[in-house]
Image 1 (cartoon, protein in one colour):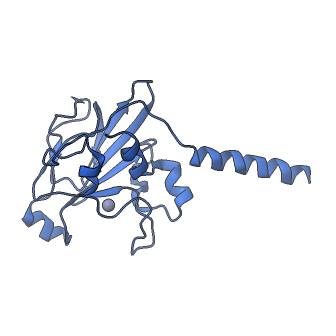
Image 2 (cartoon, rainbow, N blue to C red):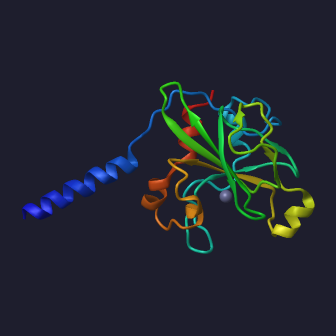
Length: 189
Ligand SMILES: [Zn+2]
């Protein structure tokens, strides 16, 4: 009995950790400068496609917010930070940035489906740094995607890079990622 109680307590504390509402002290901006007002959530959300947790054909759940863009459109960071890594083969080229909020809380964003990256690991970037671009019409065709978009993840760490298409439950997703929309909603105008 005692064991069961202890086990239950451990599970409860782990799950409350996973679900805990994080609070960052920061203001985010849209990753595109063609959004009418880059600081406005309602403007950005007009471009939202598939969201966090959406079911995928191969069985996994979506780790990001997909945001509609134009062919070859320039991509910007949602917050200042340092580029920590770039990985992935076409059409999954991924650029990860480490961000630190005003309370020194660290989180990461990864921008997936870049046609090209304009910065390197170690580069300091601001919200106005062009970090890369989306796929061109040609690249889009090659990738068999119907709509050109940015797959934007809010990550708790980048230790497990390849985990994006490997989470099958929301609980698994929340080990590695933050739910995207609440973060945007809370930290934009
Ligand atoms: Zn996506």
